[in-house]
Image 1 (cartoon, helix red, strand yellow):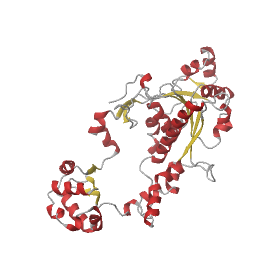
Image 2 (cartoon, rainbow, N blue to C red):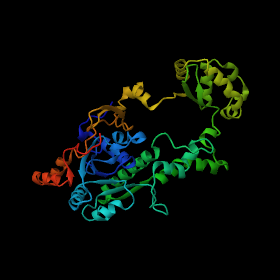
Image 3 (cartoon, rainbow, N blue to C red):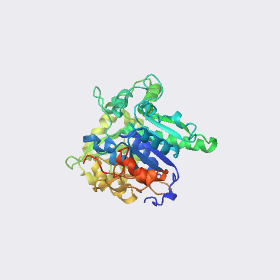
Length: 407
């Protein structure tokens, strides 16, 4: 079930955000705020955010992270364009930016510019690094995963491997949302906004903190995940009799072991004292696992899933991203949103996974064409229609919404 699209009902209704961002980290921050009800105005260059034209693995970035946003296209290299941007920011609660360090400062849109004109502004920067020796270095999601230890932990020994999604960009954006909401709450008390920054590298270090702690606790450096010492005996991917179909199974407690052995009628394992406790089973993992692998190979994928569900243990079929479009659970609870792309094509994409009173946030605005809302936004900040047309003719702003967009 999705939240009523009545804007006034949404939790962040009344919060205005101006977003100067591209790629993933900044837009992911903006889309979460937008889905939760904030009015997010995405500032794009003339012709639109270049992320719109990315190919390959980047071709889904814009579609995924820019719904529920209005679009205004401005030439920020012009004096008039900067003045329009300043007016927008002065009328807003939050600014989001994820450009290289100092880029907005050089344009005259740094945080100090608004300290007097809009002291309640929460100025959020999505960066590669927080303050320190690295703060001016260029960074990407993959750079952070490599230097932050995540790629080492993901791949097999000697073969560092980035995660299969932009997990650091997105998680870094989520930390940005947390910081923004905290600053807005602080503003309720103080009346002052302030500067918020989250980063790729420090986000990665937070995510691998459990492995740093593991070394402190055990005295042994953790192995990469493919070679890790599991805390449970049955905690792996298993083959089934269905060609190419695998299932992950995790039996992570003594009560689950009892239910598992009972459901699969493995009384010879249940009665064996060598397998009585979880730690006993971990020590006997090398002799126990081959028996379980042989057992699961006697089941088809669907039959095994049904049996595991009966046993109430943790399990999962190995799915591809496109399989989620047919997922029974996601389709039943409203977690897949229907959207229309700027070219008219229809698409279904995951909702922000946060329920409010049992409801998920939905779609208020489809993905916009570049500058689709320019005229309306300019009029809202007091610019006359005559002047708006002049600005459009001078290419200081883009009015038509689809000019110069690469199809």
